[in-house]
Image (spheres, rainbow, N blue to C red):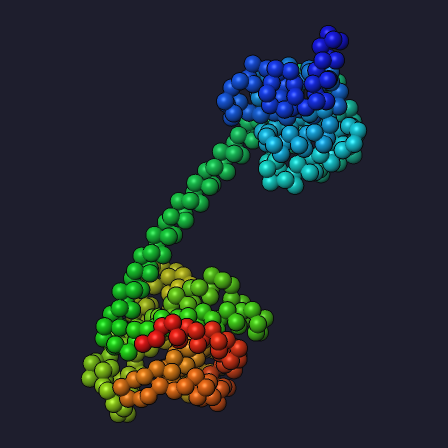
Length: 394
């Protein structure tokens, strides 16, 4: 018996047990089985007798790895993450508490339950072990049946946890697939709606693409550089920008002799044109009622923008004569993006302005027509806006 213990001790120190090509694995009949056929148990103890006893006890049911120090345990666990760890507490160098803490900090090993093997029996010692991340304790001298039962329990818990994790990953994948399908359907529907508006008004083609990017740029600047009360995360900005192309969807309800008139509109015709925000809002409202819960952020922003992008900061806009911050932020952004693009664009009834002239006009309307903070955003992002205008020329 002593000769065998000496032999095993020598092989442990070298990191390669006799008869096993994998460093740190106890010799057993299971060593030739495919990886994953049995749960893997890592045994850590600086006493060779304990290692040999525990390995012979566990290797019939588990794939067993062994380490005779805390440092060796961390090395073996990182190389071959175990399912359960049986860990001695009192060891020279790195003790069991510190080994456990480091295992729990490593993404590869944090899910493996740690079963402390110790002669320490005080409440304080157990509390310290649980604080380090232990799942259970076995006290020395240990009963083999107790060790088997507790290792089996922890292996089962790990198996259930892994199965639950796999299930959650599958559900996340399925959810992502379904969300992608919904978003694709939404984008297709939006494309059809925008195409309908473009079909009736040839001037809107690249206008909707440019204003979409203008809104994204302005909103991003506000979220990062302006008033901290403005809470816009990446998703909100994206949904707001995606909904911006629907700002003039209500024009589908405007009769052709008004919508397509090449010259200036009469007062009566202008009053007809001013009904397009409400037409757009009602159309999108009906869509949101079909979707439920107001259609989420996308349709909420679309309705805000469609109805309120002609409101003015001083309350003189339409259709609701809202003023200041009572105008939804999405509509305030759209108002600046819409007018800026209209000023730069050629229309049958006007020539395009230069960028400088358009900026001067909008800055002159800051605090009257436009939200001053959005005008600040326009000023700060001029280079980006000009790049978009150049990319999506009419």
